[in-house]
Image (tube, rainbow, N blue to C red):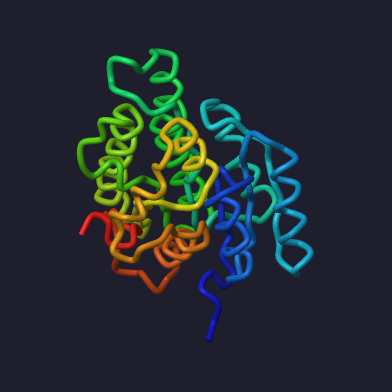
Length: 253
């Protein structure tokens, strides 16, 4: 069977660790040439080296998703290196300590907006332009959160930005579908990442409570979220666009 992303060129943000790193490794194993981007060069170097060591094709660009020029330069670098852009996974995100809305610092709110919402919008604009100019058709997946699907009193600003990402995803799917560019999102639940560990450090027992509310009775591994993104980016999901796919072990069922 042909690999899931055979002969695709993929862009992955937040690719230095967690879900993004798992996605970069998986996409390469599934046949894609991958451009990784994140803020931390040491992490990007390590993931890129892992991919190359197993026979994959990858390179990286250091970029902050809050920096419009850096983000567009990273997308442009993908085309310069690999000749085109077929698919993109907008995964990178900023986090803040959990707490009620009136305890959220304005600087934290602004950072969440710049990275988690504006960064996704800027990335999609650059990616659509690159796909149009090169591959002609393609797919984009945005990383949302199950925390965007209902009220989120512990993470109100984070949930709001992710809910806005869902809206951007749906609007882009309608706008660019006639051109053959599909746009979807994944909404992970409790996943074994540094983000969840950071939140747990502020809220002891968080992970156990989340597991207790998950019918499958465990956390997801980062690669399980990456697998969902890979399928949505692949031609095997060719009639799927505008969806926000829950990958949460049934927690929102």
